[in-house]
Image 1: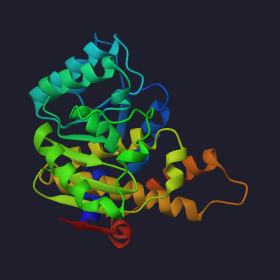
Image 2: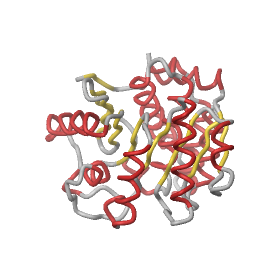
Image 3: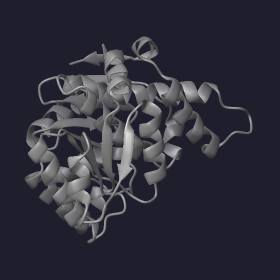
Image 4: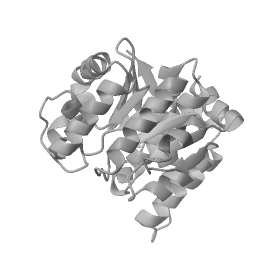
Length: 273
């Protein structure tokens, strides 16, 4: 089931506009190319609406937020909403500053997001539950594991209902919910957290999958998460003894490039609650 979402991306090759952060922009662009989509990065307020109009999806990433890019996010989001294109929010480190929290709040009020992708600390911050701040990483107290799965599923459903969107909470166990159903996905590697940008890449991947699968958005988001998990696992098996973070990053991109629907279906480990 999830594999067909991957194949749709390769068949339709959606053009994805990313207003993302300068730390990971290159990796995000390469990830989109690897999955079969097409990237464009533009954040000047004078052109973002026009750029968005020519794309099939939009990703807004708060990683290196600035006063210059906030109006761009609102303008691009408004244009995508007018056209009915999916918009994905990645609230990177939203609990770390009032600027990030205020920006996220205003975007959620004005843009009909198709999905929000973040770790559990970031999602808690969006819901004003005051998580412990841990930079852009999830706080240890907020992690979802096997011992707290029921609470995590309930939280994911609550977050989706309150934010009125599909919520993807990624971590040791990934949760993807539309408020009624919740995909519980197991996979990936802990070493993926040592590479800058895997979360940003995943948010763009979610947007590509949503753009190519408009008729089944929940499954599309779950498929994107499963694809990144599978890439992390398969890439790790190809690591050489002296390989490190840089090599692992490249192997993940290469794996996404070669991943097909049948492989994704075979490797996906999930249940729906």
